[in-house]
Amino acid sequence: MDRFVIRGGAPLAGVIPVSGSKNAGLPIPVAAAILGTTDSRITNVPELQDIHTMARLLRHLGSPVEVGDGVLDIGAADSLNVEAEYDLVRRMRASIYVLGPLLARFGEARVSFPGGCAIGARPVDIHLRGMEALGASIEVEHGFIIAKATKLRGADMSLMGPQGTSVGATANVMMAAVLAEGVTTIRDAAVEPEVADLAGCLTAMGARIEGAGTRTIAIEGVGELHGADYALPPDRIESASYILAGAITRGDIRVRGAERRHLGAVLGKLTEADIWLDWEGKDVRVTVPNGIRSVDVDTGVYPGFPTDVQAQYMGLMCMAQGKARIVENIFTDRFMHALELQRMGADIQINGNVATVTGVDRLTGAPVMASDLRAGMVLVLAGLAAEGETVVSRVYHIDRGYERIEEKLRAAGADIQRVSD
Image 1 (cartoon, rainbow, N blue to C red):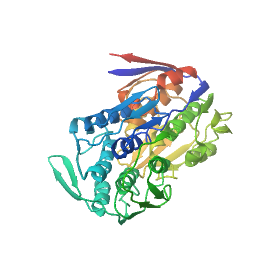
Image 2 (cartoon, helix red, strand yellow; image 1 turned 45 degrees about the vertical axis):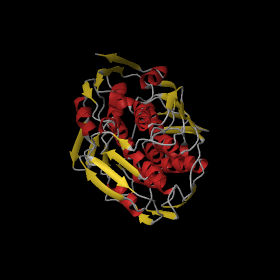
Image 3 (tube, rainbow, N blue to C red; image 1 turned 60 degrees about the horizontal axis):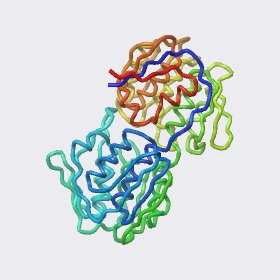
Image 4 (cartoon, one colour; image 1 turned 135 degrees about the vertical axis):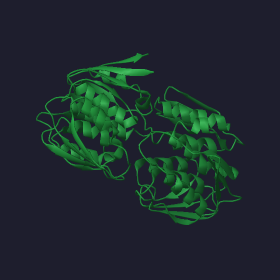
């Protein structure tokens, strides 16, 4: 099992490029592989474990998929296996994305309940509610979701859940509805950029979709979709993470290839915290000429502050002047990284979904353990800023979302090595 050995305390300086979007790179290949009747090519694909897991799942279903050099080539298939087995699905929650497309094209899907990061309850009931609204019958047997429909029919539905809108459910229903008979109206749809990107790919494949990126999406079903060539957008969470890497080390770095319009809430908080951000096109220079100020944050659905940046932001607040209140409104149990940061000298108090972070003069290196993807990233950031040596174990979590992270950070002056047991 790999771990990172980090010798911190030095400011980063240099250029860190942003890879293609992980969260857009999971549903888009599913749409191309299952719904497309001709070949597709997806470019700007990051080299991530989750991408390879999805490719293995699609091959298991019978789709010819090849990944390499930032390109995902997908061969069209006239028929597919409609069962997604537990051994593959348990590795990644995004495997649930095959449900809607299989149901739409082949009239049936058997998908094991998905696994993934342990960050609290993340139910799939909104996905199932959406499929039922389109006319599917749903049963759960022996850990499998069994969905069947002779023909899906358009419907008017809300996808609001107890914790707000669902990106995954919006994407899943959208992929099912493109082949449904009639018009589907999704109300309370997720507005995250990845939803608009999926709609862009589906439209390039021949779908008729209006309103993606707004709270109401209208989809007029078509008889079939063809393949497409589509480039993934830059990863907005990776962009934010590397901006925070420059800030927490008080460095002078340039994050290359970021999409500014997708980072509004994060950039606003960093500006309040006195982080200087100078943009030139899709490049941003990050400097900290003064001290870091403590600034409160509440996570929320897009365009609010993303829960996927909450951990990294907490790391920054550990080094700020004053006291910051961080409220996690999306996922339960997403403060597990706080205990590991405390091992490094952070002053963090947890009360339910509220973390109170009092800035300290310094963090010190320690052995720490990643509990999920973003928790792993904040431990890397803290290790870069801390005095002495930090050893981060379970870095397979980090590999799920950050392409060649140690290479990118080393190019900006970080002392970080991957060590295998």
